[in-house]
Structures are given as C-alpha cells and as structure tokens.
Amino acid sequence: MVSRLAWLGLGNMGRGMAKNLAAKGEFDGPLIVYNRTVARANQFQAENPNTVVAASVFEAVAHADIIFTCLGDDSAVSETVNSIIGSGNLKGKLFIDCSTIHPDTTTAIAQKFQDAGAEFVASPVFGAPAMADAGQVICVLAGPSKSIDKVKPFTTGVIAKSFMDFSDHPHAKASQLKILGNTFVLRMVESIAEGHVVAEKCGLGTQALHQFFEAVFPGPYVAYSGRMLSGDYCTRAEPHFAVDLARKDARHAMNLAQTSGTTMKGVELVDGYMEKVKNYMGDRGDVASIYGAVRQDAGLKFENKE
Image (cartoon, rainbow, N blue to C red; front, top):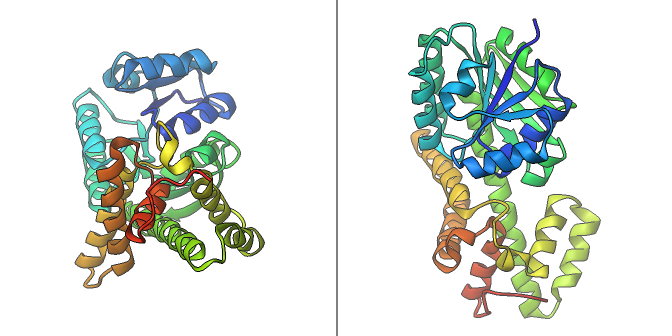
C-alpha cells in the first residue's frame, strides 16, 4: 500500500529534508507540511511542488500514515507529541522523529506512541543544513525492525546519503549516538578557533593553518576554518548552527556523562565559550562564533573580517 506522508517542522534542517522527501520520495502525494510559523510553511509550499500546507498538527496527522517530525528542542518535541496523542486514533500510523533530543525524552515519547497503538522510530540525523538541502545527511535509525524497514526507503537517495541501522535496539540508542557525535563537532570547532588565534599571535599566520586543514583534514575542518577567516561567523543574519541549540546538545552530553559516572571536560570548556557568544551576539550566535570568543580571551577583537 502506498503511504501518505506528513512533515512537521521546517527549521534549517527540516526544510532541506522535507524538500528532498517531496521531490524524490515515493508516496501518495502531496507531502503534507506543518510549521508553527505559518508564513514559513506557505513559503515552503510555494517553492516546492508536491507539497500542501496543513492548518494544524491535527490536520497533518489525520491525513497521513507516516509522519516525520524535526523540531528544535525537547520541549518542542514533547509539546508536539502531546498534541499528536490527543489528536485522535493513531493506530497503524508510523512516527519518525529526526530531532536532536535527550535520550530520556526519546524513550518517553516512544512509550507514548506505543501506548497509543502507533509505531515509532528515532531517527536523528548528522549533517549541517547545507547537507540536508543536498540530501546528504546520515540518519541514525533505532526501534523495531519492522518499523525501520518502512523508513529506509525514504533515507538513502532521498533525504540522506546513508543510514546507521540499530534495528531492535532501544530508541534511546540513536539519541545517545547523536548527542555524543555532536560533541565531536563542537570540540572540533573550538580546536580550530584556538589554533587560528595562536597562529595569528605567534606569527605563523591563519592562512598557513588553513592550508594545513586543506591538506590533512579536508571537509568540515576546512569549511569551519573558512567561515572563521572570512568573517562569516560574525556577519550572518541567521546562524547555521544556532548556539542555543548547540548549548542544548552540550547540556545533554554533560548530563549523559554525569549520569554515567564520568565527565566531559572538553564539552564544559566549549560551553563556556558558547555562553560568551550568546552574551555577545544574542540569537545570531553560531557555533563558528566560538572563534570570536576565543579571540576575545586572547586580547583580540571578537570580529575578524579578513
């Protein structure tokens, strides 16, 4: 049976994945989309064929068999799930959450869907908004194998370049990996920022270090280094990876470590820099803006517009 699909949440990551799902997924279209900010949903529908805007969460869920959610934080996910649970009969529906949330939150919503007679797959994704737009994210799938098998056709070649399969593992395993994985990104950015500041102050020069990244660490190291040196980190009107969301991930990681009887000192350091970014830039603060905070600690200006 061909399924009807809905996508809830059109933030930086959600827009790209929903776009690719509408364009390349095989389902009984159009893709039903819902976003709390109606103007954003209407703009998305105008730019993407094979989509239609739902007026509410209830309408989206009622007319779909498979429902994806991609929201900013735990409270948004929990609030939306509670609304879904109260929207009516969910038996036979499959819900896939692509949000980055605490493993305990994932476990809680999985239980709610199970109690309501619905299926659930945790599917956080690795990748930046540009990767989501290009269909190059990596999905981390956890839950019952029979449910994951229904999700896989919408991953590789549609919204993702590949997936990691944790079939018949607890849903929380996907969130655990996503949270820990994001700490490597945060610490990478902090390491690049500190390296550039030292290179500038010791006389090596930032371009020499950037050439090192190009030769030895191509990919995200080069991308973040380029954003720092160009000044993009302090001039963007809208962040790529908002520091508020990054700090949420850091808190989850530190909590996960604490409850496991260990610590993540490197993440604590990065969170301190991100707090300074938030204080300096407000909602425009981006993970790459850690460079500005490191510069300030070294007696340099926050902004660098070379």
